[in-house]
Length: 246
Length: 294
Image (cartoon, rainbow over all chains, first blue to last red; front, side, top):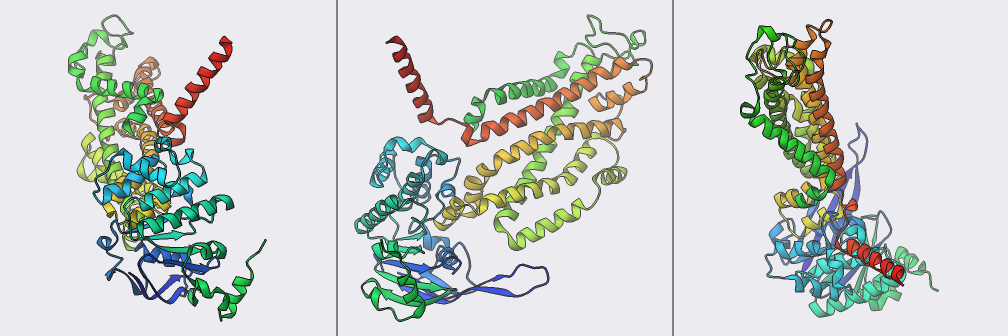
């Protein structure tokens, strides 16, 4: 369903006279099938989020392409209503001038869906929020509530693919598990594919079918979640061994 | 958003006064007690009297009527110039701040070129070429004004175009026009409104000062700055002539500054109570009353 083909991206290094460029993504290729949850794990600055922005079609790769159902994601028509996203920073994920219900309406309006208040209340209920929250503004929500609203907004149009860019990293541990369970449920219910970008291996292992280990803009290793103990690469081993076990 | 703004008492009061002034400017011929151009030699420098509430000027013309007629050039045309500048600047700023790269470079370099000329000298030069008069002054002000506003608004647009909600809007396939209108415009509008309203005062001052220099509106047409200019001729013997036009200019400038201040407060989402807070406050009040009754 989603194909990422040999993506390369460089950024210009700062400085007036320099023409040097920093390589952020180097020949990244993978694909995803429908209903799958793929985790991308890597440390900060490894280019995970840049990759996410390219998959969303918000940024252009220098070379290579991202295909969603065979169409280039750079075209808006390829994404409309089928692709959605949840970001890490929930404080800026909802427009400050919108109420919760207006925020959830946005994707519904875009695809021209037929909806009324009940649809929004159902969605809020689905993510475990009370319907009285619908009239509130972003600054009147707690972090967990805001992130749930973002998830409700993301699933509103029943998309086939959702990008979760560090979607749970800024939440409390107890809420993290709730949100992960919620995501799992929604996935089964609507057969959504997730691309789960994170640095949290445990969270990734909890929800994903497959993992990609990412380092310095390159894919180090791809592994099934059942074979997580059998990784070959040195970096992957180090990474998995560094997980704190209580 | 308009509803929210109008609920703010400060904004409402300022807006009512501004609208009243604008209406007065339109219907000046109907409400003015005298012809602003009517010369009466026997009333030269006359103090305020029942028929002439703020006295007469050096030709015996009614100062009050002249002030009323002066609203049109001093306030209405300035407002129009300000709106034109802001529409141009905001449009370009959105393009530059959202599209970035080439578009941004081109627009910003044009702004740089425009800004590199000292504006007073440019006004003098252009007015020297196309002639004096209020219309020409306004054209020059719009021509020279937009680059500065474009720069300021561009940085505001840039601040918001990286926000997650804009990236989200892009990723779900919203068009550029839609994102500009529905995401960026509401975000930058508070800043734009405040900058524009705050600068109206200085624009009124500059139009008045160009008239004061004799570049703007020409005698005998009434304009506040031109009236000040005429009053200065008799500064030593009749200083009270300065009071009325100066007070009106200062008053209007203060009015717009206050309007800008209140507008900023009214547009800030965090200052507005949404329904549930008000309900909560009402609920608490009720509880307190019940406790008192007990």
